[in-house]
Length: 397
Image: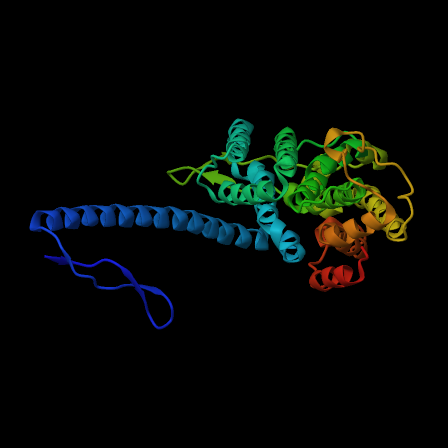
């Protein structure tokens, strides 16, 4: 029996088998063929399994991305616009985080009682812990978040990923604390809520880039507070309206998902003589509503003014102009980073897209002012995409 051995080349230089005459016995040939058959089969099976594993993982990521990117178009249109300006390396994290925030914010509307809502919050808390431990649940947000933190850890060594987990758990804990939509005791409590939600989302986006700068964190704090306060005002017409009844199997009503709520600070409402029941019954005609909204919107605008002045100072190479109240917290320490004038300018240039939340907040506050601070009459905006592009081009907020 004749077999082949030896090497030759094709015209393009690639390797090919060159026939060489070798006399072997029939039994040896049979054993060789069987061995080659088994080896080829094992290699083919291994390649197939590896191929299926890789592409299953890829398809999970693609499916997660498609589902997540399309969700905020209607639920968080501003985030959907801003994501196009976020650096590509941080977009997966941004998409996952914003969609999770939307999911958490909607929980009071989708559960029939707070106990079920707390179970859902615990589910997300466990999902985050599992995801950062390398074993994400097979659901879109966790799959995409795991992909993002894996890439981030490969680029940074894991420090930014641990910060991301800290901020994310803080977001979930804050959303759970305010799940029952109880009024804030005062404006300071509303600011704390905004700091622990929307400002925290901005901190996470900076960590995902990664960008470690106490000045960028400081800017994000003011802008996040402005955005969070504006979000509470934007929600007044929705939360103050009666919720839709839940239909049982027989078609009869078995209750509703929530009671009407008004998230204006109690001290502001008391100061202008506004009562919750008046808003629930009379809506925009409730006495004192516009005065209360004006006071709260003014605080949001103050944070935007502070952020704009601070940004101009930093871009000119000066100090921010005031201290950062959270700079002593460990997650804002950023040990080993340099914060001289030129480095700060580079940080602002690199992370400016994160600051675009200021444009969205300012856009809503301007429309609110145009409606004479009646949140029920605020018109939708078609200028925001243009405003975001102009802000990014000029590096102004």
